[in-house]
Structures are given as structure tokens and as C-alpha cells.
Amino acid sequence: MKNRYSILILVFIILSGSAQSQIQTNISKTMDDQIIQQFYVIGISTRTTNANGQAAKDIEALWGRFWNEEIQKQIPNKVGDEFYAVYTDYETDFTGPYTTIIGLPVSSLESIPEGFVGLTIETASYKKFVSKGKMPEAVFNTWLEIWGDQTLHSKRAYKADFTIHGKKYFDGDNAEVETFISVKE
Image: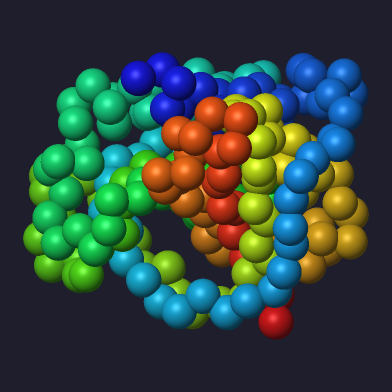
């Protein structure tokens, strides 16, 4: 089960700056603009910050809880089996406090189980990145590219960013993860 959330642990270690200068960003990705229509997510959450590597600890614990407590089986009104990691409620940008939600897309927020959270992700413009290759390295490098792109940084909306972990995430050297970054219109 650790493999399933190890990708995000590495990503947030990078956010803390501890390894950013040591990693090359030779990645296989595509990027395009698209409008994502409103959808809902139910899951579990934590409030964290990337300062001093705190996000790595908090998000590792959140993924551990997600898998150990079989959270995906407790979510009502699921509309798919892909799991989402949503980054939202940014205080400033990726360097400030924000909320992470790990869950699944749902048809409504009418029946949120106790201890869970529901989120409406509003219709918005997104940049889509597709990480291809061995995980978690491919997604890790995509996040490095996102954080290092000053042009993109100035366009980011910091409303709700998310990654989609579908069946292809588990395809070894041919794995794929989609990352969506909200941008200003």
C-alpha cells in the first residue's frame, strides 16, 4: 500500500526544498489548456504547509489512513474508481498553508460521512500535465517542472489543483498520472 501514496510523499519533500536542486526535470509529459466542468469530491483531508517538510509527513499520514481504513469503500455516490488528490484553500501559493483532500469523485455532496469532507470543484480553466513512466519519479518531475515554471506560476489561480490516479498509475514503467493546475482565465 505504501507504493500508492509514496508518489505524493516525494512530491512534498521536494516542495520543502530539500532535494529540488538535485533533480533533473527530464520528464515525459504533455501540457494543454482545457475547461474542466464542475464536479464533486468526497474524501478525507488535512491542512498542511510545505515549510520544513511538514507536508511530507502530513500527506503520508493522510494516504496511510486512506488505504488502511479503506476510505474509498466508505464514500457514497461514487462516479468512478479513480482516486483524486486535491490541493485547495491555498493561503497564498504552494509555499503557504493549504488543504489536501484524498478521495473520489461523486455525483452529489448530500451524504458526506462523519469525519469526511466534501468539495465542489467549480468549472475553471486548467493546464493538464500527463506524467508518463516509472512512478513516483515521473509525477515527481512533473511537479518540479510546474513549481519551476515562472510563467505558469504567474498564471496559476490557486483554487483547486488535483491529480488523478487511475488504473494506469499501476502500470510499472508505462504508468501515467494526470495533473490539473487551475489557471486564471
